[in-house]
Length: 232
Image (cartoon, rainbow, N blue to C red; front, side, top):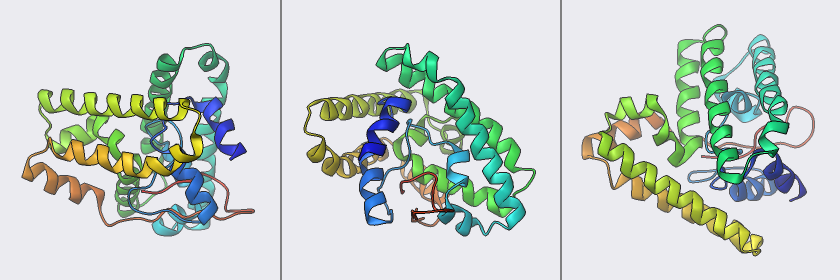
């Protein structure tokens, strides 16, 4: 639990949809559908690639794992270098800045992985990333374009996500963190269902295709097992 709150201080409260599930899954040693991952509403691809279960799913060879490690370190350094400026921002601005930093890191990462991942590995990585990000995936221009969301849908979905994040912040600030942890998985799934309620049948079908087959994010202690923690 100490690790969780230390991470909150580093990354802010924008990613509370992922936080409690991550803590619970780390103790259990696994993840699953509807779970959470990482911090910041958008998950860093570099962080994903440093996770052993993701590396195993992508069938990375040793050379690719080394490239993934370098990419993850670059992503971490981006946040470390921004640490002081983030601490000086209020909660809302901090969350917005973290989103910007993560999206920038992900754009750079997707370009970088093209140099050492095979096409099928890049496709699977994108599927895992979309599963991991949950509702926040609907804020990504790539995802919005693939689903052909209208401006009205984008606005409605943005409101759902904003309201959900506020509810989660209020939940954690209530002081009853242990019960809050237990409620986040249900809250996260409910948010996704609200968003899917704004989609047409055709968009729902495309959404399922883009997610690919379900992926279970796992965690292992000790050397080689450190890295991002969470689940779909």
